Amino acid sequence: MRKLWTDGWNSFWHFTFGALTYKAPIILIMFLMYQLFANQGVYEKNVSVDILEFFIGLTSMIAAVKTLDYLPVEVFTEIIPEVAMAI
Image 1: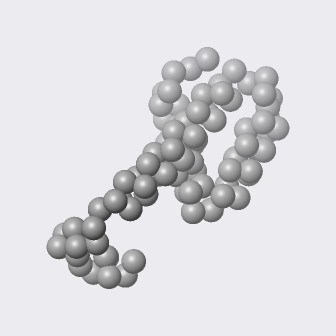
Image 2: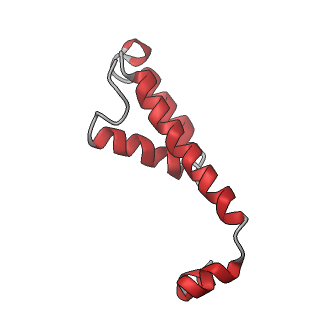
């Protein structure tokens, strides 16, 4: 079994798909189906690491959103007013 973040771009995409799952939950089902049934499926030795990278991305996005919920809107309007007003 490989270590976390040692699979190059694949590790990046696992994390990114996990983060995107916060907005589009269908990615979770698609990712798990692919990991569990494509190629060797659950018998591949790195499937658990790939899924862990995915859930680290999802957990990071949830933590970021929950943290930003506690910040007042004024913080964002001072830093980047155009983006804050679009949200």
